[in-house]
Length: 392
Image 1 (cartoon, rainbow, N blue to C red):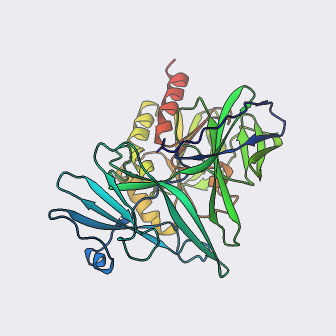
Image 2: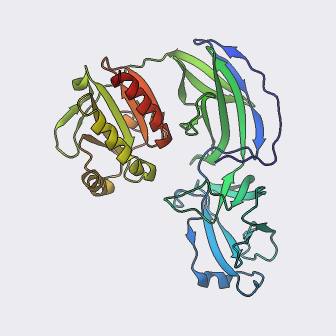
Image 3: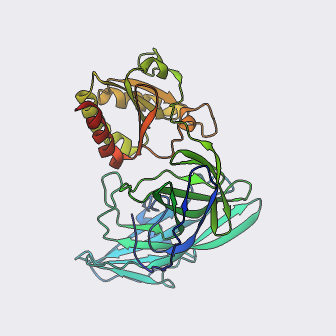
């Protein structure tokens, strides 16, 4: 989701670089233009009885009040993650006008906070500084990060349901560069502190001409592929440095695994001479599950012309659910399950540099990667490529 409020205009210098050459990209701060990372969603409505624990102004007769809470943490058991939950009170009248109040000072009192008013016609959304507190080794770090508060935003759907409102991170830094005639944008933001108290910095980049919104997320220090080169990325102040480490080989890494359903051996080299589609997904990934019918249609259209290998990144406990999905949807092709291990460099998730789900990788008859697309919205590119290859 993109935002266009409180725009800070800057001028970027367009500099062209050639492959096999180090280069730096200047970064400029942006507020309100968009975000990197996930929209921050209310996880659930709090118990109505909890509302009585808060101070809030009495609503008009007929108004309904709902209490929501948001956690910014993936795992509250780790000391490096956020310890706060943010409570939000939403009041709606009979014609769906909404008043949203955020307990920004975490004092369980809504009467001393700003009330944001929305109607179904609202098209300008406020930027709200939200306190982010982290504790690492008994040291507490507090920062205020701008979020955009949205209501009545029909572009956002979560598991088929439109949320009452969303918070979207509205701060990032942006840069622009050209390599071998191809134009790229890069967006960067500071992330949560890691367990050692170091501030992680993530970034995404893609070609400007690429209409897909999806892009894989990297961290400063990672090695990325730009055109035909590999570059290690480092941050130096407001410059992102791309350090050339060698040419990129499009040869798909071979692997040998056991099929999750049949128990038979699955080895990539056995498919040489055929086109092969690797489908990286997971039973926990709703967009992945939603893309299954389209994937089945492709399998039916080209059943005798290419192989499909679905590679699920799932926890041990989710294997029964994974098998159930495969059976339910009659996914009649090869299936591999990779362990839920993020730092295992023998894992196919690492070998193929998978950063988002679903990811589809198409391999030609010689074992070369000829297409890698991210997300269900990239599926049209995959269809076009297969049509180009097989429908001549």
